[in-house]
Length: 411
Image (cartoon, rainbow, N blue to C red; front, side, top):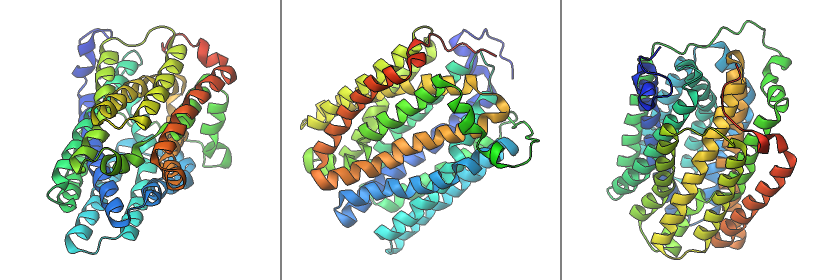
């Protein structure tokens, strides 16, 4: 849908009705997801008092994503991506209502939470690559970096509002949090239904081992793309502290659910500020080196958070962490989408989503295991140090990525 404004004007992207609807859908989905994450984390830690179970929540979401990734990419390239995303968000709404029912009826247990989160993980396996591959069909190639920055701002806005709102509602009870999340998931499905653009190209090649694994083969053939997504994988896998925030909130910083909500929101405050900056002033030069610098800052901020016993300092460290992370996200997603032909975006995005899911959900499991063995502070500290080591190694392994200068489309 063409815009009446020049592509280099910041307001141009806001004149694309399909993108605006997509943006609202992303906000509703992410607010719901973050609210639900606060409630699940606090509830399962209250039920078990175990860091291991906090990690198992991440594992429960990662396993189906790992098992379904290759099939998901093929589906996203063969069928209408909007329909797939709508069904996913509707199903997430049902899962949220199931959590609400369990809490209200009194049968909620650690086993029921893990089972429902397994279903949520299976849904995310389809939703992630579908939403990633849908966006480039809504805007022109010139507007894509700006659209990705605005999309990142949607996620970060939701990550600020969602945890804070979830923590506030949890003072009433978990049922209210889950019910509100379910309503928002359904609203996101409606927003996507109003989009009249972005249909997937017809994938005429028959399903085969070669076509299913085409996304992996494509990424291996592009050193810049492989380096970018693997850097994010190992950095967040090691440096992610999200799963341990309930422990920090309750046992180290001595706050309640409201404090947990603020801690979960803090990275998004920094990320939102940075994403809005990037939406107005997109990265133009030295993007590869900028990405490495941002991930290094992510590691340093993680170390500061690990050692902090001040609630205010912890919030500041998490905000800096979030600002650094969004730079990496925008560069990585831009490289993946610009380099990938539209007929392969589903399969390539599926592999990218597996890397993201591995770094996030499996990272939560890794953090939970490490904290159970050595304590939460050591787990986060060693993760921050590991992130900095990964940056140094990846600069040697992927010199093409270090030398990447711009995000201009080559097509």
